[in-house]
Length: 154
Image 1 (tube, rainbow, N blue to C red):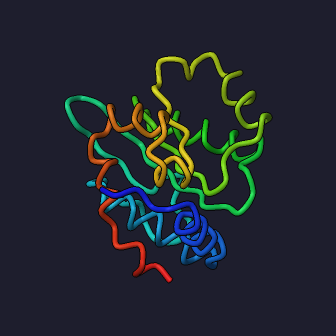
Image 2: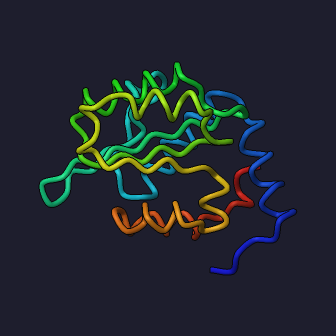
């Protein structure tokens, strides 16, 4: 796929982040479905936009397309969701990223160490960063996000 230009990436990200909460929730479900996950329910989704059970592993997908970096409260919810769903691998897609407090709180849970966690942002997806490449190693279908017709999300 041809990488988008900086102005194109910024416009798409700005558009996604300015959407209503119900639209963002639906986008998370659609991303999950597009990636081959069994999407979570509409509305309050019990901390899961999608789940795949494959080769004896549970892969958890959560999308939080907030216009602000995710904070410590979101880390608490995310940790709880990973544990409740007994995920072996978890991929979080954030709109703007993660605060230092989010990262510190998540790392403070020693029982989460066996879980492979990929914390991605929309920028990671559009720029195909190193973080994106690492996540793609665990979930090759992640590269399919590059095939979405982003012009249809206006």
